[in-house]
Length: 376
Length: 248
Ligand SMILES: Nc1ncnc2c1ncn2[C@@H]1O[C@H](COP(=O)(O)OP(=O)(O)OP(=O)(O)O)[C@@H](O)[C@H]1O
Ligand SMILES: [Mg+2]
Image 1: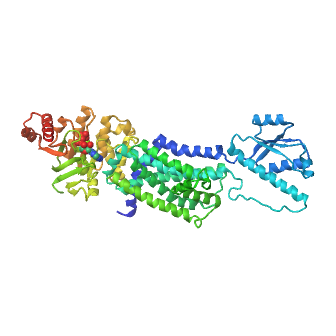
Image 2: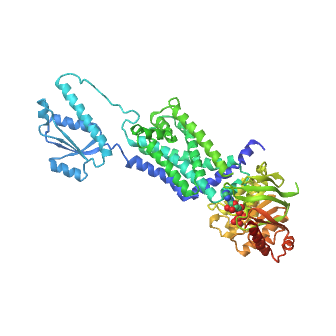
Image 3: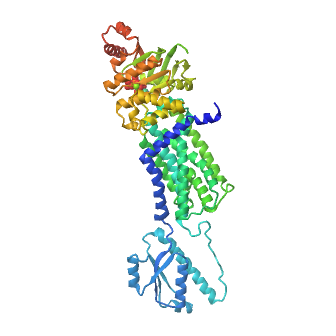
């Protein structure tokens, strides 16, 4: 038998073929695999905006002077506030905020310019609808910074000297600081984790539960073909999911893909292998599909919370950071964000790559051994 | 080709926790025989079959199936045997044809040979009209026929059938036994377990198991004569009573 015939007649192919048919027919699996990326993207791309910019803003300018107009211009320039109109008095301002027509108001009292001219402290107010502290905090911080800068400019003018310090913050990689840019690469990582661990383990447990695994073992299929035939389809699905999410990210959320996409696909291999190892491991522990699901969700939880997917790891207490180090996703997120947002190359990514490779080898070896024993 | 289809010597299986499911079993099954394995629930029938199919490793003793050692040559044995488990092992979410095609391919059938073999099987057992139906929606009788077709698509030398007719109506059972005799007529050795005594009487030779050990062996006539009972059912009940008495 020549090599081509051997490859074509490998017992791995019928497994692959069967697995894809089953995947397509199982509504739950299909929904989780296709609906979940959509939901996650919409949820995290649109709904959860940690960086609400362009707050609709009304101005109550009782000073009506060059100085007060300069302050309005400075605030608008931060990009945090969009001028939607001027109001005549405090009642009108309150109405605008309460009705939702505006979520911020800039109030400049009548003596604003006069106080500046006299060398006194001039007061101005920004009122922000802070019902959602997450979204208002960055606007508030932006306003404070803008006011400080404006103050420095005025003082500099007064002493006819350049400002003593000129601190310019340059947010690299995500200059507009949009959360979608941060989240969408994470969605890829979370989705792959879900498919490789939860979906894969339930598929294997189902096979054992229904007695078809026993049937398979008495066929001449052999363990490598059996396992590969069972796992490879999910790896392929993972690559499709990844590609779709990336495409949507670029088209809808304008995610920069600065780095090498082929490199990303390559470095995804150890992550997928490691995650499949976890899935296989779950399948050897769980007694039925429900248990496999529960183990799967249990594993997802730290991945969502501690990997740096939504919450930055640097802001976590140390023990939480340590737990994060035990999750393959933590390293994979570094790779994802590094390549997609920063254009990082393999030279800078060798650490997470090495970590993932170690995870892949250890997890896969352990789970394959356990799996072999359960089908004794 | 060696003469015997199955030879076991002192075959034993002890499960974790110390339960002796099969105890020093000495058994020989001849080529082309329809051999019945009888015994009450939990007597070790399934465990014996699993050891012979290479699903379980024997704790002690040795066994050969179609001339090959079950522990050292299980890969080889697998290409030559068919196994129909108590649970049939069908994929509920694949159609009748997809199930057959899957198992045939796993057993190494390809191309024209596979297509011909599948059509022949589907026609013979009358599954053709149901080819696009999901296996999970088949009635018990059809499931059983499909499972048999899946287990025999590669025309094995030896067939293990573990309670193939449980939960199947009398007409389907009769049809099933007709298929079994046809397979035997073509030289296939068949080991079948059953709880139906009329089926037991259709076997050429019988073995009785109780709590893991062999308590009776021979043709139907030999067994009736040996235990001085009118029917196999009486033998079954008598043997079980004796064995329980011995245990007490
Ligand atoms: N994997 C296992 N681990 C532990 N004990 C087992 C295992 N499989 C079977 N047993 C026990 O071994 C004994 C023999 O079981 P077996 O399934 O071989 O009986 P059987 O003759 O096929 O019964 P039935 O007629 O109900 O199918 C039983 O007591 C059973 O509980
Ligand atoms: Mg049984």
